[in-house]
Amino acid sequence: MDPQEFFALFAAERRPDPYPHYRRWRARWPVARLAEGMFAVSGLAEATQVLRDPAFGHPEPEYLDPADRLPDQPVDESGRVVRAFLSLNPPDHTRLRRLVAKAFTPRMVERLAPRIEELTASLLDGVRGEFDLMTSLAKPLPVEVIAELLGVPLDDRERFAAWSHSMARALDPPFLQHPDTVGPAVKARQSFVAYFRSLADQRRREPGDDLLSALVAVSDAGDVLSEGELLVTLTLLLIAGHETTTNLIGNGVLALLRHDGLGAAPPDRVVEEVLRYDSPVQLTARTALRDTELGSFAVPAGSQVIVLIGAANRDPSTGGDTFDPTRTPGRHLAFGQGIHFCLGAPLARLEGRIVFRELARRMPQLKLAADPKWTATTTLRGLATLPVASGG
Image 1 (cartoon, rainbow, N blue to C red):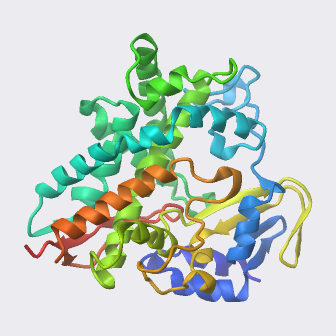
Image 2: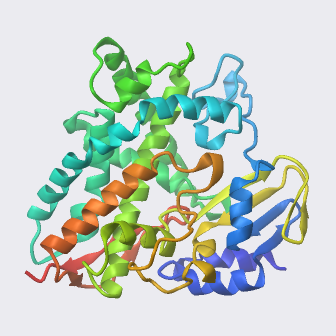
């Protein structure tokens, strides 16, 4: 097959609705070999296999000569790049995730519910008539929540959000990235690392009742997070806890307004159907850690596998292209599968439930006021603008 057919799936003109193209691709090639050592997976069964099978994982972190390191790039004592646990294989992944999970507890998430409700109410109280839902609610709410969770001072949250946005733009694979995104992403990461290195020092001296303080203090049988591990974990939490939830809210409201409107289904079911129907995370990648098989293909060790989450989630067995927020939630891959299942899923679901419930209660007549505009990223799929009218 011609790999250009695959790359065309992500063309800018297809961004408003890539799913018909995904559907045709999935029907022909649930697994496709794009080139020697490179595969794409769009079938639900095959995508689930890649995400769950220990034969697939991530390349081992590289060793960098001091002259080749970017400023403030965390490395361990041997010069190996420090990565967040999401990009590691066992046993490194197991160790780091266990430490983070001891700090980022279900109780900590549940405790945020009243604050999320308060923030949502405050943001919605400030809008009437026509407004951009992304600017007014979907963008500020998740960054306020993750900043609150981490204990970021109120005055710093605007730049906190800007760093997150710049870093998120650089998450696309190289073949989808615009060169202009790389420089700002590097600068944002450097600023973020420097900021949180200083804030972590403050929390060591004066611990608070926040996740940053818990991560600084967390221990498991004497094992603790190194400074580099703490900083990459915070970077992961920022992007995963902010950008994806912004997209969940925006994509969800758009889907609801294009179908039966707000209030047609329980909020928990709305969240799961939006995650399936228009997933905030559209693709991910894995590396074959040993020779294995995928569909009818032999996959040599070292091969790269791109998993099209957005295509797999629209498999006919899950509901296909029909948006039905009243359905009993079924399988989807929006939070991944296996050992890398998203640690922040409970927080994203909580925010989504509260937002969809409060919008339906406060603005039951909400409707689209103009066509929305999509962001230029593919890995994280979301809206730049969503013009709506409250009807009240």
